[in-house]
Image (tube, rainbow, N blue to C red):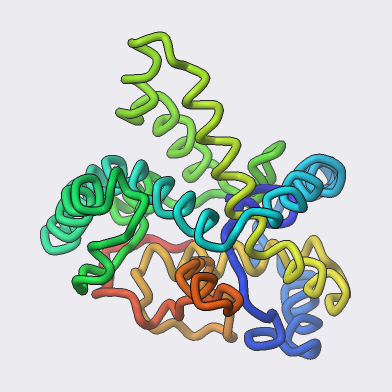
Length: 281
């Protein structure tokens, strides 16, 4: 996920979600409250955050400038393929969370898009009314009662915490497509996939991050707050929370097909909640 110093999908106008006053409040509301901030290694995190900002500015942003030259339909197809390749891990996490309905949706989407959708190039499942959702091992462990731990900024990957970092590490070794490509000596496909994933996600929200940076008192603190709220919303599958409006970090690239900028999907539009079993510290 690429969020100011790491992958994290988002788009739309940040003003739709954060007025400057809200951003300022987000920056300062936890000052002096160590329990809420939960950032005991903040100096180290800020250093890594700065490194990631340099990476975004001088590496990833130029790549997205080139990516922008592609037709919208091509970018949309790339996003669809990347989403389809993520389906097996999403399905595994649906099952581990005991989400039978969501597991069936994921399996159905994968089968339909892999066949009728031409290996995922076209999101036929969405056209037939089967919604897309995301899951990962960090969310699964949260539903099992594993606490998030302290705030952590990872090099390149960006905002995280010990629970989510472990989830990301484990998933990098069990992704079925990566394992298959490794077994047939096509490791370059794994790196190609990860590269396009980073470019595709960052492309959709790079200007929005600039706006957040411009309107926030403390950019690092604003990103920290946004990340934790986003993760809490993801774990609860969109269940209402007593939080200020935040962007749902999920792109709808289909609007690009119609010449419209990509828009964010509201977290409240997602499917049913995981309920009270999620542990959000």
